[in-house]
Image: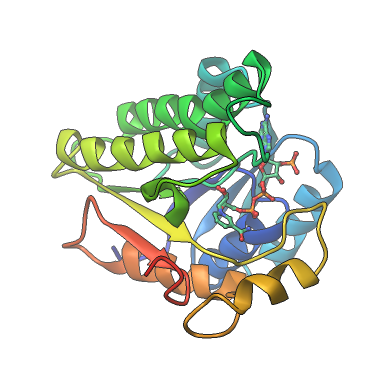
Length: 243
Ligand SMILES: NC(=O)c1ccc[n+]([C@@H]2O[C@H](COP(=O)([O-])OP(=O)(O)OC[C@H]3O[C@@H](n4cnc5c(N)ncnc54)[C@H](OP(=O)(O)O)[C@@H]3O)[C@@H](O)[C@H]2O)c1
């Protein structure tokens, strides 16, 4: 896909990896809808930074735990603002360390609703908006741990495993008009409640002996979006940690 003049909606794009993806796509000529829930100021700042790069930007707030309603609101808002949407990036996520014995029904619901059900209905609304002559691209942010058994973060892992399955199934269902891929990051940014030492410890276990950066994720994103012959792929960006 030639990115110049395309329109992308990115969920959870006010801060962290989502923000870096938004700025990277803007640098490549893409107009951006920044979705956020609580980071209003940061979303507005990200819009300003995109506009400084010469692209259009709009910020839209929606709580993805009300998944179907939020999906309609977000896609409607981007169509109203830009007249079309070519790229959907599902990046918003919750990440809590809950084991089977420590998790409640609320933990299960919030992870499954925000990390899986919202992307599901966003994909549905996005696909409905694609016109016959248009081409679309969906990229889902998953996690390499979604493809491995492990202890802890259980509702999170299950939600991301579901998102991998959704990616592969939609790559078939939505072909040839829409490509659907995923990026599976490893240690990129510490969880908001941890400091840099979290990543330093993780780096010791990583074959490339360092944590990644949002820029590493953006390189994978640009590759997937610019490729016209890759769909149903889960691209790991981990420094080899999954091995
Ligand atoms: N960070 C890593 O190293 C890493 C590793 C593996 C996978 N990943 C995946 O990569 C993606 C980006 O990671 P990240 O660390 O940048 O994400 P993050 O900071 O954990 O979350 C991104 C955004 O999700 C939004 N969000 C949370 N609950 C929401 C809700 N109910 N409704 C709407 N939005 C909600 C928040 O928006 P507001 O701030 O506006 O509330 C938050 O800023 C995620 O899908 C994550 O699972 C990240």
